[in-house]
Length: 229
Length: 126
Image 1: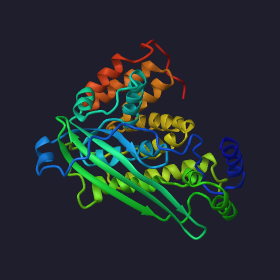
Image 2: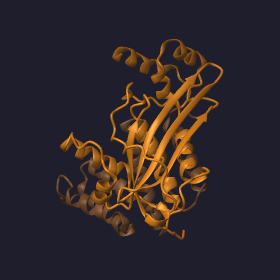
Image 3: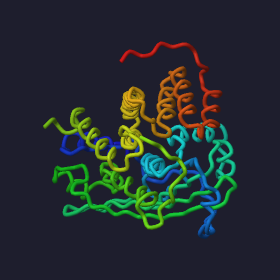
């Protein structure tokens, strides 16, 4: 795997003419992220309104996809729609470093309960995000990117406030590679993991999150923060 | 057009992206934060770009007396801490706390636990 990967990188650098984004650390196999709380039914009506959270802590709850970094890539585009919707969003990269440091200190920390997390970070609510798919279907004629994610907002007392499941499929005109020979080479000889590494999922990630928080049919209701810009 | 992947092309793309998103929703000016963080997670070497962009972006927001979006001060603080600039990290965490009281518990904890402890340090040139 390693020599193939290295030679692929060299080849990609020399051949590609697009804005190639190679993720050197990419590997197959989902990393075991934080455990999601047990699957619950829909939130009771009025739960969100009565909890009226002002601040939201976003944490990865699982990555079912085969892209090892899918969680953090999706979370990087989530702060913005949440804050635009009127919530204080805890800084996702800062929170990630805090959680990782704690996981190192206590590898058996296991699942993070919403009440525990909310208390320690001083958050009103915790948004658990599970990546269910982060796929690419590629061919010479078309390429399709798919992201599916599950969102569960839990109150600081552990109650379920809001849920959403979103799936976005996107056919970009190009996937970040414009050299057709290179694309054919990928199709013939390289695994989907490599194609996934060079494809540009950023617009898809943004759309999945925006659908959940802002534009979707059961989007998150507005938060209390009012700003005058 | 510059060669693909060159800094100027990348900057143009980032500027375009920031401009497009800036007018999409409008509550805050994010200065390309989500895109730069995304790229930073794709390859760690690109986290520096987020660091520099946040430095510039926050300075320009402060000069214009505009609200800094939730979390941006703290993210800059964390990037400074990761590079060993704990004094600047503490100052950014304090700014996050002042701008967004919702962050108080986390910012207090980050400041109290910063490692290594704060020592006087000169601001980097540029």
